[in-house]
Length: 350
Image 1 (cartoon, one colour):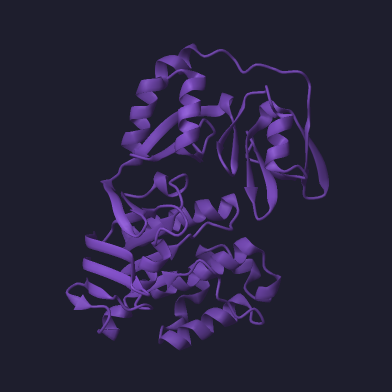
Image 2 (tube, rainbow, N blue to C red):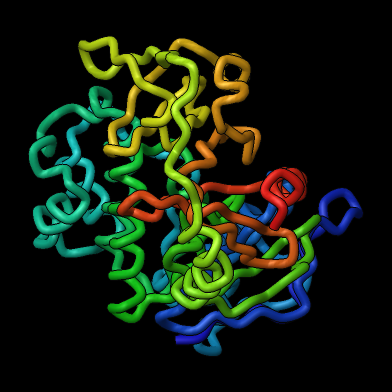
């Protein structure tokens, strides 16, 4: 399977908003399309899915024009950024309806529900599911389609950590089964662990196209920092201070040294600890940054506050894209803005 884009353009009101001279994606590739909001990622995905017609140029799948060939378009599946679900149905009913709509045999519904971890919620109304469970159900539609080309628009924007890790594995499974995968992301903190290629988009133009191996980059980062890490002192204990947060029905009191990072998600501030727990604090990220001033925390990104004691490596994915790798068992990846990378470089003198 090969997707080929040639001299693709999209104009609105006489203004060119997308212009891609050439881009090829082959089967089993996992391509991360990265760039800031408004750079054209969603626009490109919708054009590849046949939802928007190009103003110029061509998009072909194995030589078949996606704008004209319905059978070729049927081999492409798009996971929207929004979950388009019939909330009065339950997950099993919804997937049965989806199969009928697309002429797909329904024999794999139970298998797919199990794959996305929804077997125990299969008969619960969709409107009672969590945001992460709804996202898993949306992903289940992609699983049922078994597309030649899978397009995913910001797949983990609103999900919990477990769902993000599950999606990473399911995407790799899709590629192993022969699908080509193109997913959009604002940064590479999540997709950087498993993508095989990175395409940077800036103002509707490709600003970079890189083959990528996380293992190689990670090993390179370790070799450069290994000597410093080996000589590093044990984490410093600061003036006693507890960060309060709620986990289920408990108020938790965390020592700052126990916190891997804090992040802003869905209007809430979430703490992730060295043991893998997640808890919600009433403090905003800015308030938490002020409270933790002088205790080894660093604003890596507008939505991430990271404990410097748990940084394992600074990885440069592309010319303008940086990520922090943490030392927890999952080797969590945290986005690092370009400006913050300069500040960190001065702070740690590397």
